[in-house]
Length: 243
Image 1 (cartoon, rainbow, N blue to C red):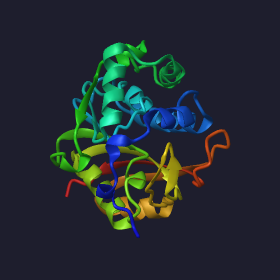
Image 2: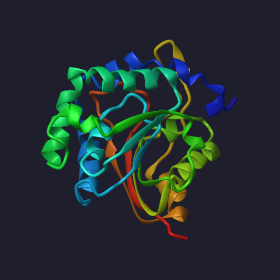
Image 3: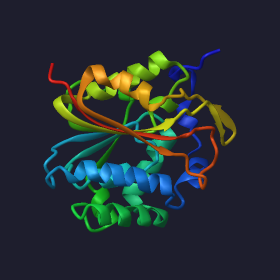
């Protein structure tokens, strides 16, 4: 039986297990994603993007850090209650010390990132909402990291998530994304979670009809990360079509 997004209780996403597995230290794979995203944002003037969105933010703070180099207002849109609570706590009480090396790398790669981690995250506004409910054409830039392929087992629904991601920006709006490559459904915490295996070819197939200047690359799996069955990461930049 195929598991769809609405079959899952995302409010119970195991935030602490996920952070312990992936983000309590800076792994090489995430350093590579940060380098890719930093190059993307480095092509933009500081504070040149009025409003951006982190599409399905989860508890991952580093996409918000890299975005702060160019974006004056960042909506971190997230449906899961546990993730929203974590994000709000990080903004209200100050980010955990484990995020500091991520910020240091972001700033080293792009000096336009604000000098301190709290300053970088001060541009972030947490929005508790299903990303599929976002109004089309709301943002100048959209970022999505490890979301669409981890939201469903159904390729058509994965495609719909990606198309909704593209539609959040104005025509000519900028897009940056990262996906787990060939990720199968996996176990985390006390439960199993759906995933849709994708590759550079399938990501290109999904995004090419809606974008221009599409660039899709990949990196190998990081042996220092838990083995969820993936084969690496797929990285994307593009501009939304104006038609």
